[in-house]
Length: 480
Image 1: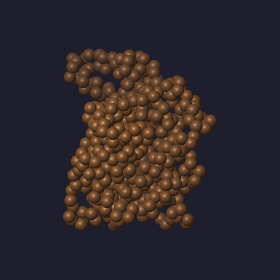
Image 2: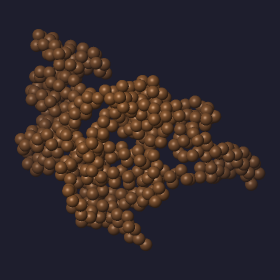
Image 3: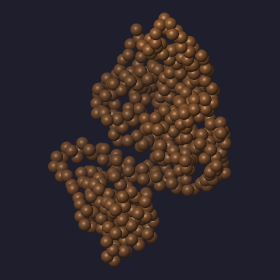
Image 4: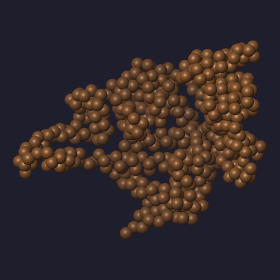
């Protein structure tokens, strides 16, 4: 019997900044080693399949920063065992040649592209950001233990905000202007007069936050800009928790340092990305976008739990009405095709999957431009990107192997057995029953047919809408 072993020493001594976020690239290109790295330490192994320390850290950081789990040795050992099990299944997928599947390649390229963009943005922006001083960290600690009850007047532009502020100084009530601004921009419940409720540190952009935390109850601040527009704040109330135990600050100090810098990085990156998109000419083909929406609409989920399934299915789509090679837009005169858009769509937030696909298209184009710029600076050679390719490939192999196993099940036999069990409870002996079995090429095609049937209640139309068509078999069961 082949044995599984897990290195307790490496797992317990490996420092993983869980909860600090996974978006910060941990090293610039200049920090990449110039010579070949030494062999990676192995945390767990089975039958020649090894889980290295770096691969474990890469994935566990993602898991522990989002899952409601306490990071300790037991959690790390448990997750290492789960990763090793997935690596074993992924190896079966590699041996079966599943690396060549379009959905596997698309997933890996999406993940690698995201990692390249992180390296690019860190190289362009991260090196320009200062490190927080001790005073900065202590101020962050104070704000993290203080909450503000705020009210705001919103404006889209600086001139509009300045005009509203002049009206306040002339004696127009704050509530009157707040209600008017909420109505102007379609905010739900405008009669709430811009009351934001209790906000805490990290709830707002940096400039509005600094402005708000400098107020005393009753104060009104001059207009301040955020990434979304302009704001005039009035502080209604303030609550501050006094922490006398010095160890509380020391325990949170490193996290606060990270988040102080990460917030500045995120805002600078957002502005840089916006400027990059504005620097390129985007010509959209609305008719093709509408045709693409018609093609993917039947795949959209009717409940949040279906989002992951839809994301997997979209990678396989080749809508007959919109060939993948057809341009849906032009970027500086170069075509951006339906295939490129479909490959990027699983990374687009579900809120942007709307009949007007332009916002989603702009996000896909933005990512494509940044990925191209990252590739031009050789971000694909960064160690973090190489490691992300390794992680994404094993994850894609794992899920492709599971999907391949599910698609090889005999649904006809399963349905027949279920039917025969039901028949034995409902019918007398020697009863002959004829039924029809439909065997689809894979689960994606079967789901597409079922969704179409749910929408039309026409089974024939649902079968005609999928390609390839299912194999139909007429079966007869006789109770004895």
